[in-house]
Length: 605
Image 1 (cartoon, rainbow, N blue to C red):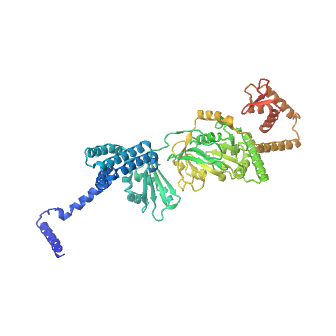
Image 2 (cartoon, one colour; image 1 turned 30 degrees about the vertical axis):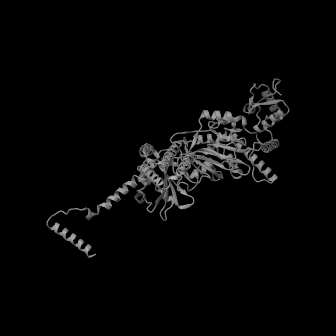
Image 3 (cartoon, rainbow, N blue to C red; image 1 turned 90 degrees about the vertical axis):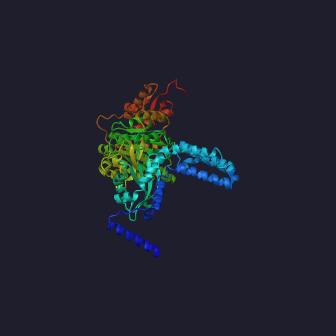
């Protein structure tokens, strides 16, 4: 110890002398102990570029394992060969479960495993330095390293790891000091990380800092998504979308359901998973500004619902049928005027009451949809127009919203801005359990469409940047995830409607009886009232004569129900009742859905 003290004393004394006489000291390796610093620097470089050096590391590991096998376990070569074949087959079949989603990636992993395992087998049998095994290992490692070095996801992961290595400084800059990254995963469109928040921090705090995070990470605007982890309050999933997966429209693949009891597939989330939601016994609301894609979402919904033989669809479109008229052949009723809309909703309430009475008599609690007892779905386009032009309809929609769950009578409304004035004073908006928000202009409209407090919780519908993109809030979708609905263009709507129209179900007997009872009640009420001046007392007889005449003069393709209503002045339920009576008598024939004419001698029996 005294020797070390003397040495340090001499070093300080020599340094003072050099400074006194202006002599620069000579730096020696022992003075600064450069060797450990060089070793540490090299180790840091190896760790930093460990991904690029991975092929060399694997090649060295294979060579070392070959030496060990040849020296101590040469008789294991059959075991090595069998294990290699099993691992290669497992990677080809189940590679997607180890983050190898693409077939070419699974093929590369399987081929690399087969090469390494075959070389180890030969090394164990012949020796690792037997010609030409060393050359084969070197050349093969270089050839297999080229795809590894060029792989996009590997390079992206390296870039992400180096970016996130600076997370402590980033977190300090954006106000999330104390948070740290637990894991990271690169996908096709960007990367996602699991954040462990600092003590006292919440997911809402991280959501507020999203613009600052976008700046600190150097991403594009709107590229970051933050979602809570339901199991732990101090965890959050942060996703960085470097390439927008919804930049282009997604063609509609066709109906995804065959029964209204199944969840409808409305579109795709950004990770490619389907947006599935069940509409049975749930009312729905589609909101967003004009041109945001509400009509497209409604078309996708109708494309699925019209394929269900256990659902009847009624429509209300006060834009004179501009949106729903292409689906007219699949809609049992379509109201395009305020008066017709009021009558349609009144009949819907009558059906609701009839079904409730039936369930009560049978001791049942819910109406189970089937082709003989279909669910009733009422789709209303531009709900605000309905409330303004047909104020009397509000009491009907309120009744359906409150009581429609058990008897399977469902409302689906689309509107631009579902304010209290637009939705009426009833309980319609509060009963909407499924809410889709397409793009909106003002932040406050987020809470109008999705519910109070949703904007603060991270449901940023005002950041949606393309038609068809939406956020969905439903019992099975309680975190904000961006999605895009499918594109079903006008030609697709026409083809789909023509394909589904012949398979639409008729109204069930219980609902039809409820409509007949309501029609009889209206008739009896009108009979006790004083008749207006010049009223015709023989109107029913004249209507029947007009009906027979219209059916007799109808073309071979038949007369439409709309034409028959115009010719006779009958209401739709009365017309259907009279047509059914005449059909049972064998006097008329239904040519196709909604088209009738008188039976003729040339018709088949």
